[in-house]
Image 1 (cartoon, protein in one colour):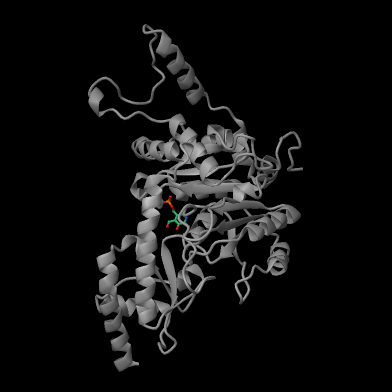
Image 2 (spheres, rainbow, N blue to C red):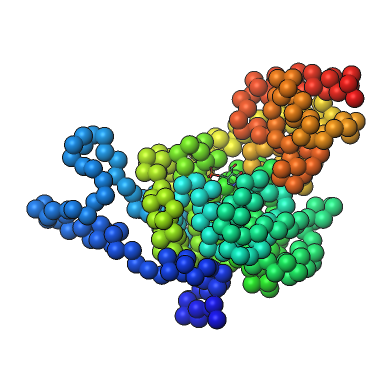
Length: 418
Ligand SMILES: Cc1ncc(COP(=O)(O)O)c(C=O)c1O
């Protein structure tokens, strides 16, 4: 009853079947105001005597202070740059299920950070449903799913050896009647990534179980091992990618994120209609900042070079990661997550408390702060009790050096007071 067989792609058919009725109306209506504005703008460009009274903003009083609303889908120039960046960075040209040229601007909607992107996507797929949340997970996901009327159900992907237990995941997904699955690699908090075979396996699982995969790829280029990959290349018909410039380009305050899909109706039409009723349009100033950055990055790619800005960011992050790991090991912490030597990506390390510490992660962090030594996130909030997440991206190298002494002070406290 809910299917809409005329839709040309599995993604549209599936997402439509999950949408509440009211949202179906939003994505299938043609809002009049943006259509008139777009037409008026085109006419005004060639007819100087054309008078515009369609605009909902004050103009012509302090022209130098004006910042115009942007299009709901985001600035075209930015959508084009993001598409070219992703096509190059994740090798999306010529992949089955994707256009032969890779992505173009029709496959990109700009949003106010990945957070808004995830919220909107959840409003499309989560209402009244169980949404699978892979473990470990960013702590904000649960609220995002619940705000959209969904129920987060944690799906632990890995077994004790950190292999994906596909059978177990499948059983849980069937049992809980999960219709979409939210994944995040490189992972916050662990930095874990998936191998190509595992990504293909997940794509197969999504096909078998008719799932929508929502792939949070905000750290996608920050990898210390192997080539970056996007889930879009493995399950183009099932994947909605949410990503952002917050982490990789150091501009979280600019609030610029993107939602990508192989389906141009989804990214180029349904998303902007949703954005219009969420935030009207993403932040124009932030988008301009990113346009300047991505122009350089895309030009590097298209001239056969590694993108310089992000490569520099990655190099510094890798060094900070190396430093913090040596401090943590020295104090008796071990790395949790798939790789015990070095995380595969992202911007934090997940460290297991030394065994002799008898308090839990929350109490330990609380004490470290009470003693005014350092902060960290108790990783039980990500589904990893007994561990702490140290976000080294926000720690210049000098701070990492000083962490050693401050950690020692907290450990000394427990030596004396346990
Ligand atoms: C996994 C993950 N997704 C999304 C976000 C939010 O990104 P944005 O600043 O683009 O909203 C974060 C921020 O910490 C994150 O860790």
